[in-house]
Image (cartoon, rainbow, N blue to C red; front, top):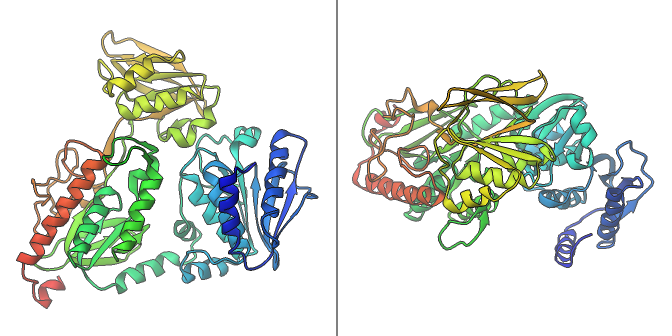
Length: 529
């Protein structure tokens, strides 16, 4: 089941076990059950502290629990095979059950342990979903730290009937005590906030306790990291605060146009950026959403950023690198059927439409790449482009046109996404030349029509924004407000590319450095403004 390299890696990881780990499997006569048996036998053979029992009688077959040998009430269940992106989740579950400490702050663990309600989580994932592991790992940790919490992590491909019965059309999909809890990626601190454990107030208090920064970067994508590395290396006390570290990189798989790197994937590049932040002693604050920018009243004074949890940070220079998000179509049915057939991540949700007819909206690189990838999984793809021709790179267009199960519609305006009340069943496309409407029957619509800058929170700050909501910057990355700079996809830069964002982030960092060394700090009254 495991290749030699994975076997050797797992063997090394298991050397960190401190106490016994018990695996209890419930298996059937199917092929997936046979593979599950093989996997568990291989794991148990790698360390004396791991035992396996195949006498489980759970209704989900195949499935298996991983539980602490020292406390049988603390366990997590995997239903189906946790391979692909979830193999790391399996390894972490084994280590945590075996007493290896998680890399989580102790007060977060205490918040988990203090939960007194009985919480039964069920979470559906797909093996190709790169957003799912964070949710799987968060729920695993909660279950292994608190006996009143259980987590059943279900591979949707092994339980298609259950996926259909629950109308799950996007992953990760998390249920709590039988009711929908959250659709999409959610991390441990956010789960605790939704459970009202008081963690949000604690996080705000921690922010308020931090000393002022010389440079505060808002945004943890390529632009923000580049800025923070440059300013930290100049010797300035630098903080970087992000709603989701890595930003859009977390939703990007194949990256083949980054100079010096023949191929990488977004989550891998995001992890590399994270390591670089740590290596440069940059103060990283993750999972915080900026809510308000309060500029200094005096040049050289302290700018303030307020966050949604109520906390605040101050700095002499602020660099805005908040990036962008997928643009919505804005047509009837889109919001109503979001996660019920309307999707934005083909890598995450594509497998849920295996053998079905779907549409991709958008003829740029993202849309054409999505159509090519989905054509390998689904029965048929209809690609709809508003313009008179596709705007993607020629090599991608040629590849798309070579596929037999793809139809390309240009000069097409999507006017409505239709459904039966529970899920998508079609869409209406208007021919912009003839004016005729065409109804297309399908099960899913993947929207890939560009980006919207994450700048709504800046509208009352006095900062100049373009008509499209982008932050207006000069050639050096300076904004209309002294001491505030910007870089990346949230700005008026014409090309929204990783390499461009990195370059602009470095430029903004150097400009912030130049500002700080040429500007005297304001007095205490101004700093308190």
